[in-house]
Image (cartoon, rainbow, N blue to C red; front, side, top):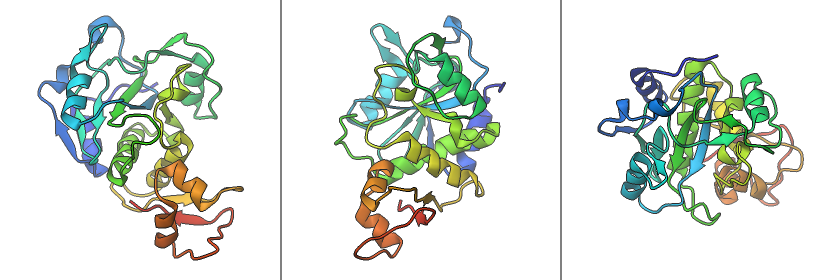
Length: 250
């Protein structure tokens, strides 16, 4: 059972991890606590916004829209890697999801299928909305992916959680597809690598698994396979082996 981080503790954790943050006016008291409980917290949930433009994205996530009042998350992760803090407390981001998934997050074990929506996720998860159209084609720039990784690692480190405590909305609620454009398994591996080092470290590793190719790893992590090859001095025929550690380009 984890007590939610205070606003000051969250800011400190993010800055220590090297996250570039912008504190939006009033974010420390902007929440939905009057509508339900906030905490205990058990994990971090990642979303995409289906919006274009940072200013519009931040505004929508702060204010919400008809039928779904803001804040819609705790922070917005922009394309350039800047994280805009917009809420502190209960936020309208997760909705109802699978109790089995929550139990797995708490136990830090493999996630079951999210085949039901019977548990309040807004109470138990920090939520971060990432600026992206969510069509599988809108790119995920390196600075943005690194910020997602750092934000997640910062909160996990503060609570002494492992990377298994970070999930995507698509792993929580039936019918959801976000985030689309990279895999959560790849993100968790990057977070795990970061957690193994000191806060604010810049080196991120990926351990090659059986059946991996540079192309499949690139799709999973949201980077180009050509950059993976270049950073790791891999030349034609671009062979990799299970257990090999690859440096992930920013």
